[in-house]
Length: 307
Length: 236
Ligand SMILES: Nc1ncnc2c1ncn2[C@@H]1O[C@H](COP(=O)(O)OP(=O)(O)OP(=O)(O)O)[C@@H](O)[C@H]1O
Ligand SMILES: [Mg+2]
Image (cartoon, rainbow over all chains, first blue to last red; front, side, top):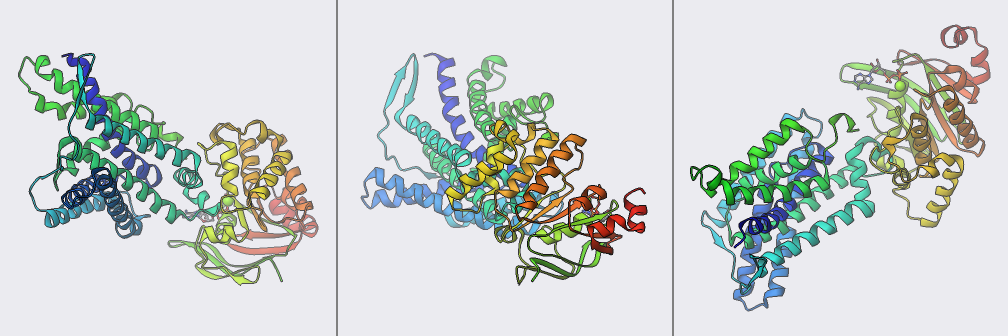
């Protein structure tokens, strides 16, 4: 088997998931300059809700494609509602407070959501119902499964839709305008509060999709899964240039590939001293390196350019 | 009935009292200017009219209704359009997108298309630059874009805060020619200017602000002739 190609394929699949989550961080940062630390928890909610709903529906004999769609819809609804609610009650009252206040609040929200999920779902790992008969395709010595292909397709479709929304619609234009100059957006007749709420809603919908896909990728969901995932996706957003949408895509894919390659070669590189479970340090090591040489991320503008 | 009428308006920044109770009105179709030294409170007053700053005291009546507590986006939708100090062009939206933001709350696509043609007619330079992002325009072009964008909302009242700021003399001339043209077409205008002579020459009435209070008000020709105003603001 070709290790390099295989790790690249794995990395791109994983990276498309990171990118979905990174988009949520970057959109909220772009519009509020807030690092929404609770975003990883929204992904976790999406995973738990979709796994639960899917399990119930499949057990009740609902056809798999319909069950998957309904589970996704339920996750999207719950995540959007949670994201919008969090913005309304936790962040909006602090809109004009010193920046540390909403940041600490975001960490608080993240802990609250995690504990809530623990109370509702317990501490055990929920396994993703085996709804798709696994099928593996070989391709130039690398292998990829039907589930993985479906994950990449759904992630790509979701991101494509997001780009269209942001670039081509009236709401998207209002989002970009609000991110660039909130006051002037208000002067244009934009209800800035609604646009900010919509940004949280859209970011949370992406998180819901990501939650379902990640649960199916790893086969499990857990109340604690949002933390490291959120941290990595946030790193991906920073890697690409936080606030920059193409940057989040690039950062997510790169982080996935780096991590996979790292996992594949870390043993060889360290003479067996470090095993593949050290892959997480790669992500953060690369992040630190990029930030040293390009503090605004790969596609980020210099901070002075921000209006 | 005046289009906009302000009574006892005060604007505070924490403990700083920037505007200390001013009365001001603009009639439909009138061009009124607000002049005064740096820090006199001109921008603060105008931002309170647009809804960007709360009134600490006083009332603002617009087209017959009290709008003192109305949020900024609803004032915009009722026809108050402001070109802020420093222009406020969206730097990473294209010229065309900036203009579409001006018509954000409008739904009459035929009317929007007609107005787009109209502002491109007023500022042919913007048509040439329509695919370029706002941040890459020159200062004069940005000012044109900001005014054109404000017109795209079909305002009833246009507020202009120092349209000449930071522009070369030729650009100032172009901008003011257009402002006079817009006024001649019947637009109601409130204009802030550092350059008092230019402001008074372009308006029919003026208010002079000093330390957050209105200290003179008269027809612009009378203000231009007034020895006090000439000494303090016209360098004569
Ligand atoms: N954000 C703010 N915080 C505190 N004080 C402010 C703020 N903005 C303005 N001020 C103060 O309010 C007063 C009036 O300012 P304002 O900007 O309204 O003046 P201006 O007449 O527009 O001046 P300029 O001609 O320089 O634009 C000044 O003393 C200024 O320092
Ligand atoms: Mg000013």
